[in-house]
Image 1 (cartoon, rainbow, N blue to C red):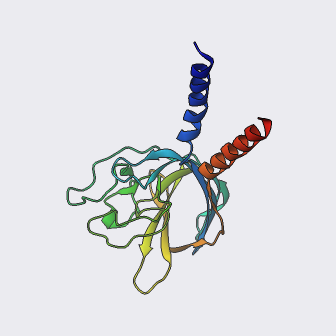
Image 2: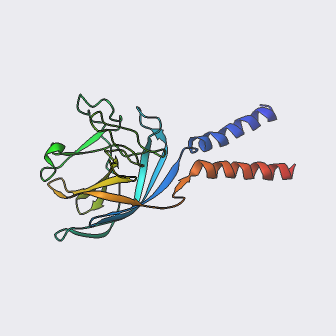
Image 3: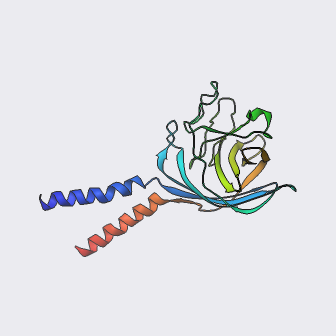
Length: 222
């Protein structure tokens, strides 16, 4: 095998794994609302929802979560892991639900409109979520209206979602549900993201910077 061919193969093996990480990233999300607060870090790779190319599949979550309503008192519970998506079938009239649409059954305590389940997608929308339900026009924020579902220990789960920008408001409203499989412990709206300047860290940019550094080093060595 020629030296040139070996060099090309070596470069291909180097670039392939780097290219797969260009879209990878992390998002530091801090939120607070009536009796609820959280500080979480979301990670995602290059994989996207099969229906929406600008919605990235979350690969991990970490951080802390607190909730108190006078009966339930959760303080700085460790967050994670994410609950696996099930790719359930949405209602026939809902033509806009992402492919990642999933349901999580809760035996009692949810609002009647939930029909005994929480919905989630475990997707992140770096450019802001579009309308993702045929019968609900409001949208926006890094999550869609189904949001993400994660464990906090003790058989408890948290569903965090975006209600979108509601009429008369100029900010994204988020919602939180705290549940077990047996019952809903809390269901809260009016949750806001706490501004985190520069919280989006696109690993692809770091990879490009690393490649640039390697190019510069190589040039100096010539």
